[in-house]
Image (cartoon, rainbow over all chains, first blue to last red; front, side):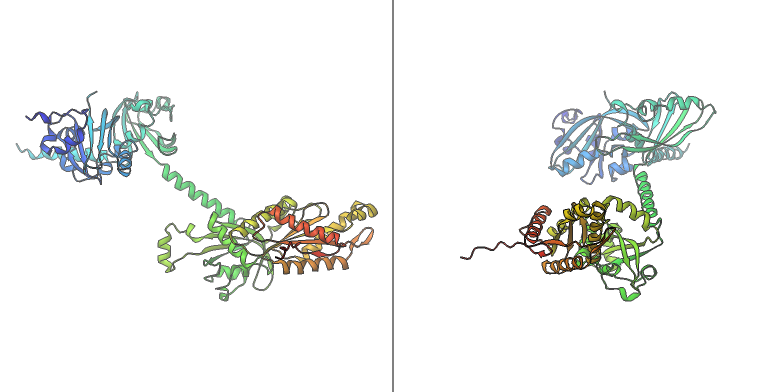
Length: 130
Length: 443
């Protein structure tokens, strides 16, 4: 196994490395990965995220994240932040405490929001570990 | 034996999960002590900002700040199951962005151990409803005590664009009124072309413009009414759509003329008390200066003729000393009455001091101000006041100033009129003096 794939949820400069991974490689990570295009349409949905949410990739990929997949992130803490940083042409790398309703259970997680004016994909990383 | 049913079941389970994920209302299932068993995204989204440190493990704790009595309500609900509360409105504090929110909350007791809650953000609905109620109140207010009203469409210049029955009913005008200025609904001296444009501008600027007063029917009869002008864009949500539908590039105004016959007395009395001089019944000092400020604002936006006349009763102290104050008062009332008969309705006629009067004449230049001032002077000279002491003659001295670029305030205009009045007094009284001209030295 390529050592490069052992990405940590909190490691710095993670965006560039995520962009280099294919779907199979994303599936090996031990945190949830949701990748989306500038129009919020989901393009990456890794195995762990799929398992935690109880939704298959087929149901999620190709749909807008904040309206059709995860409305609980459609607020000023997540969706708005992506919009604001894009409007300001800035990069975003922010980790915040959050509660997701994974399979309708309130689950405390850490979210990491990643975006860059130079990248065509943005990411929401989900870590269930305390 | 056959794996398909299981796979179907998994698919259905997933579809069901997504169904609840995307349900546009907040749904929560909790134990009767409030511990959350299941919660969907919308519920979490609504409750997270309310609960301290974003903890969503207990329904009652999470909602404690906006509904502190949920636990006791449930405890007091003794039936084995049923609706504990149904669509109760809860007011939530504003979040990091945006103002306060209004939630609709329902709690259902499923059995002895489980409850189900539904939470919805109804802020937008509540605002829509309030707006509707607000409009209803407006409409009621507009139509209460109204004998009848006419709804009139105006173009951008304030001319009638279409005739309808309400126009015929209230004003007596037929379709020939189309194309005429809204001034047609006012007595001849109650509005000027410039004032028409002022009213349209003020409607555009503040959303509406309202004035009460005498209105004119086609047959020349007057009725007490009000005229409200509102820009049509305020009524049509989509300006471009409205323009596209009407085929016009610009939308105009709506004019509502209300016939207030019969309600004039009470309304007029209240208005009278606030803005009229108690002795003479013409405008008081404050109303005069308010009107002058408004007129000056209009002048600054769009300069046009505007004149000010100052009137002072000659030897008034002598009348008081000779005949007593009641006779002096009668003389002042006489002057006010003749002023009312001499000036136009659009002019602001006021008593601004003991025996000092002022008139503001919109759209009147120096020549026409001098003409009407002279008419007043002559009328007073020839008609003595009828008093308890018999006829008492009283002449007036009049000073006139007219607005120009060098004049920047009401005070400045008044000062110039005062200088002219001073000249009239010193010129021998019972005369009208125009602006004291300061001519540039030749060479």
